Amino acid sequence: MPRKSRLSPRKQAVQARSRATVDAILEAAAQVLARRGYAAGTTNRIAARAGVSIGTLYEYFPNKDSILVALVERHLSRSTDRVLEIAVRLAPDADLRRYLRRFVNAMLDLHSDQPGLHRVLFEEAPHPPESHACALRFEETLAHAMESVLRESPEVAIADTDTAAHFIVQTAEALTHRFVLHGLHQLPRKRFSDELTALLARYLGL
Image (cartoon, rainbow, N blue to C red):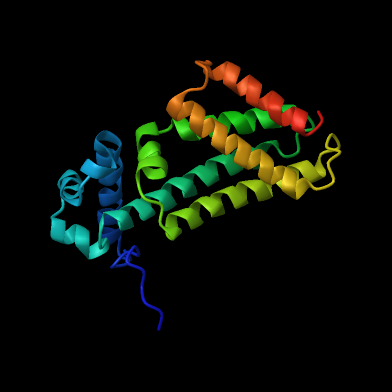
């Protein structure tokens, strides 16, 4: 029998009360980590913020990093749903440049939502394999949706739409992350959106 990862939840939240406890712990962790950072965001502070005992917290999470993994999973799951909503809604649109702009703005919105927490999860905290796997699933899901759009668009002359979709998703992810958390040549948001949209459009030959 395979050994359970030290970052896996100790106890699965099945009943409504247990799920509420886990949600409270994760919400508290998001607030504490966003405010205090990774080092000072201790499990004692998270438990106090959630209104549970430290013993209760450890019933569900063996350590702080297991909470971080759960937060990454929750954050990227919500992010995927939001970006896919854009993809599904605009896929039939013949104006591919408009689609790219909406995609860029969706990525900007995602990174702008709780930027302090985003910084902790993806810059300050360690990146165990579980977190890395979540990030890869996020990129793969978005790239798959993007590839479908590119493949069906009469405007795209690129034959390898799968590679193009991965380049677009990873470029947008990297640049929007940098822009939101650290700025980029003091560009305002609209100018950044215009420049990134133009970059992706030129890559596609639009």
